Amino acid sequence: MDRAELMTFLSLMDFSVSQINPPLEDDSERGALRSIDGFGNYRLRVHGAPGSLLSNSTVFDLFFLDSGDRETVQGRRTYGWIKDSQLSWLQDTCKQGLNQNMGNVPSNLDPALAFFHIPIPEVRDLWYTPFIGQFQEGVACSIVQSGVLNTFLSLGNVKAAFIGHDHLNDFCGNLKGVWFCYGGGFGYHAYGRRNWHRRGRLIEAKLGKGRDTWTGVQRIKTWKRLDDGDLSKIDEQVLWEASSYSFLK
Image (cartoon, one colour):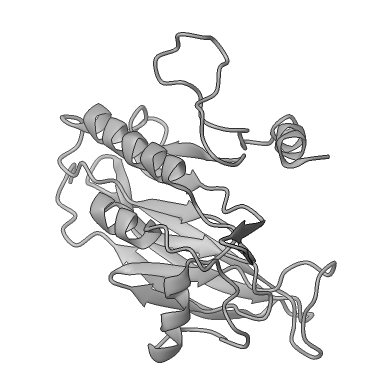
């Protein structure tokens, strides 16, 4: 299967929430998809707790982006990268979400997380910072600097991005206020390291609690579980916490 067929298959599986690509915003053609690079670019909106005042409002966003495979740039083979069309969609979607939530909650910038496979070039700079976890191999990224980090910074709501590709890295590091975290070597179908346990990263988003109702996201944490017989929990850390949690108390 090619990438389009594979994403279509995944989106049709039982209990899958994945999408092939975002739909057209204007609904001019029912079922039509936006013209965008790659496959598997989509947004998942997480609403507030059932029965709360935010049950029909977005309190948390998850953005998924296709970072591609391999490409050739000016005769040089390199890895893929997130293209301008994808960043434009991300910006448009965030602005749309901001407008929809205005007036519903005092804090209009609900936290968001991004997920994509191939790291951006700036992740290499985390070697010189106090990262959390293991940095055991070079960052295999594109030679193209497409402006992903600057886009995240301009949006203001993306608190962390989760990446893969380099199976021996499982660290989290902070770039200008945005965390970049590897998922860690998870599956047994790909390369790893002898005596280095396979591991999976977990993410927890915790809602706040007012006097009478659940509120928006108060804290986002992450940690890893090792496949070591005890499912050991390591490297727990807070990625983001609401600085002033005053609404709906």
